[in-house]
Amino acid sequence: MIGHPVLVTGDGVELGNGQGFAAVELAQPADQLTLSINDASGRSVRTLQLGAQDSGIVQMTWDGLTDSGTTAPDGRYTISAVSELGGQKSATATLEYGLVNSVAQSQNGVTVNVGKLGDVSLNAIKQIL
Image (cartoon, rainbow, N blue to C red; front, side):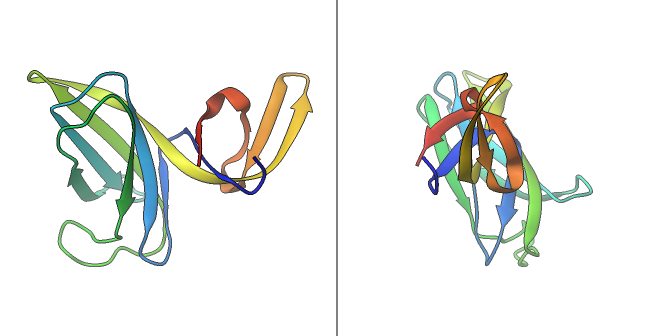
């Protein structure tokens, strides 16, 4: 597990060298999945229409472009997602990427150090890539 990227529960995406990676976890299929990317002040910089999706983890790559077509500066952004099924919209769980640095046993169980995200519980990891 050490040295591998993982998806953990979270709402961040790190943009670096024109690429950012994130994912959502759909409990049920969606007719339409919309992902919003916001800067540190909460201002929307990009909205991605990801179309119809099956249930499960849906990964996405952000090319760093804003809705106006300019390149966003490298850094940390937040994401939120809304899925729509049969005309009904609902908030959707978002996941973020991180690299596993270490794994440790603690009083609270197994914790995993995931790069900039810090220590997370093993249960927070949704997928090992």
